[in-house]
Amino acid sequence: MNIRLERFLLRRSKLVEVKRRALRRGVWFKVLSHMERVQIDLTIRVVDKVRSSFLAKVLHPLLRKLLDAMESNVWRLVKTVGADLAHKISEAGKKLGCKRVEEWVKDLNFIRFLTVMHMNTPGLYKT
Image (cartoon, rainbow, N blue to C red; front, top):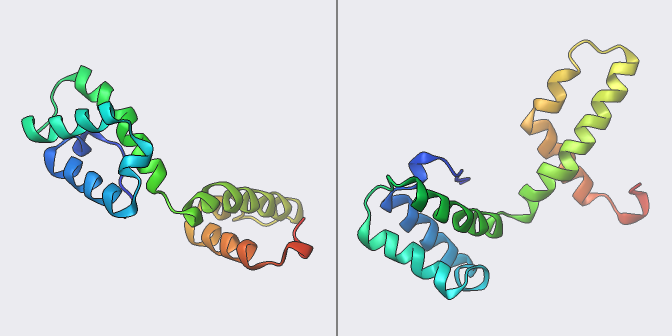
């Protein structure tokens, strides 16, 4: 489940969910300082929905740290390696005259496929 930082995230239920996931994955204490953990815990106890723009500005970097730390290695590779491979392949397709080549770069399933293929390719054959 990929949680994005949007306005709906700044509700008690979503903050509790992110905290619970961070505790399960062991990043709650590794990524956040004591003061940052206290800020989130206090917000959970006091606020049902964050309405203050100042509090939202304080919480967003903390939640971003947690979400980045909880992101899987495969998803990181999808965003970096897979997207780059899809772009290179689409450029080659353009040179060959393919008409629907722009869709390849936006196709998440194709990008995931390229990422998995890259992960399973022996190092000797990677360029």
